[in-house]
Image (cartoon, rainbow, N blue to C red; front, top):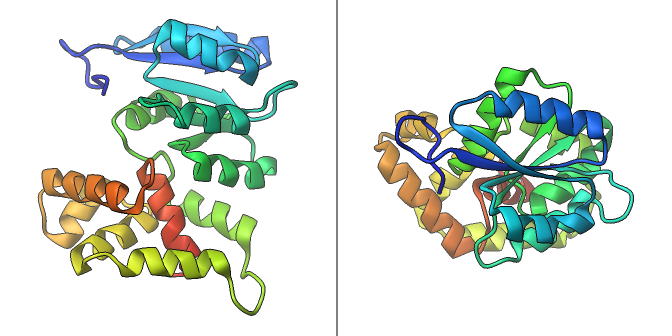
Length: 229
């Protein structure tokens, strides 16, 4: 995992993927001026991503969704299937909520709106590089509520699967999973559940292994699928 705190740590290596040259240039200017980050490459379409990742070995890929040939959803799925994939941070607008949810289920570490202030973009990249979700609780609830709604009556295979998977956890693991579903940070979980941040990180890693998921965002989605938050 890349260093994200400056000092002697290696800079976070970022690959920017967007079909809009102006967006790529703007993001390069924002991130290129940050001491603990380095923009190592750019790509204009999802079809270019595998070769770019192989060539530049980024820690984080800033991924647009809507691109002409291969969109960001397909590119994200392809990246997350790699043995040691980079983290993916989706670039989007709220009118693409359904696509954002699909990207998160595919393994993206979070999303940014394209009009996000520069300082927040930098912080989001740092958080994703460190394995933290970039979704605030309010945005998480808004996104998932907007996309999924109340759901149809009757059996829901996705809900039943989520309940089955979460039902196999220990009580403490379940508490941590529910906290992730609420969008809490490691520090917030530490304070609420009276455990050290290191212990929280250990539980999150254990959850990812037991549930066979890529990141904490997918745990949060599983909790929402189960209807527990």
